[in-house]
Image (cartoon, rainbow over all chains, first blue to last red; front, side):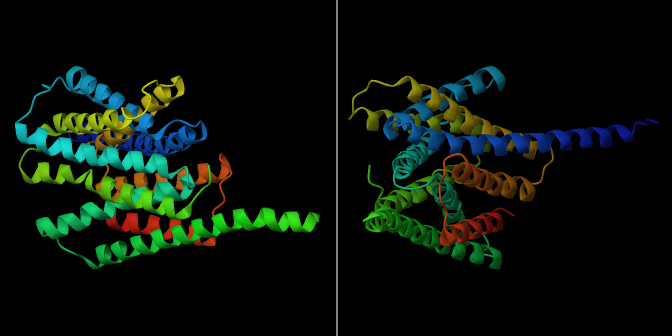
Amino acid sequence: MSGPDLFPVRYLERGMHSGYFYMLAGLLSFSMLGIFHKVADVTKCRPSAINALIYAWSLLFSILTVTMIQRAPLTAPPSVFWIGIPFGVSASIAILAFQAGIRHGDIATSWLAINLSSGIPTVASILIYGEPLTSRKIIALLLIPVSMGLLWIDKRRADRAAITEPVAAAKETQ
Amino acid sequence: MKRDASVWLRLMLVAFVANGLGPFGLRILSASGLSTFQPQYLLYWYLGGAVFGVLALSKRPLRLATREIVLGAAMGLCSLCGQTFTGLALSHGVPGHVAFPLTTGGSLFLVATAGIILFNERVGGYGAAGIALGIAALIMLSV
């Protein structure tokens, strides 16, 4: 049975299903990005080359998306340009530091460290735009430095073990 | 190359602050009433990143390896697809309090698992606790 009132419900359900498909695709895309960072490190790619190429390719892909899919103009008010450029530079510095950093650490912990940075826009929004500071946000923001501290302790212990384990093994063989 | 925990921490702190500032431009764009120019903003955002990237690279030999070009393209595509698909999920009715924790927390879990299984990384007790607390913090921030 199909009535005119059922169509929007069916449409909404279908939209919702494709929404969850898109969410899964987004999750896999972000995960593959993290794994490729590690692959770049393992295959000894230079961090500066990887950083420049990620942004150069992304720029090309976004030009294609804006012009061919969204069919929107490439131009915008100057203020859009002046907001976009410095924040893009900031993100590029982040990728360069991250790619150089995983030479000294694991992707399992480093990926978390860079993702925890979402606490910074939250703090900035609270300080600059007066967004409400809820108890949940306070707990989350307090957990971020605790988590970073634990990751660093784990890293330091692993590095010490990497030095002491071969020495202990050598002593045992003697 | 010798792995150094203090170098790792310093570089991760730079990445942490710089990466945190990166998306704040969207908040400024929205507060300035310029949200309709989000695609163009993203384009300028990538342009800024590319200009800095090329300047940083120009201090070293400019010859690019094939693997760097291929991986750069794959990572650029993943970055764009991640943002586009998350945006599409939101516009197709998935609530933000479901989409953001799942994409962020899920990606952290998958990458950590890949690190341990595919790349034989060892995560100790402190690391596992740090990952668990970090995922909890990110989920709390995004719901």
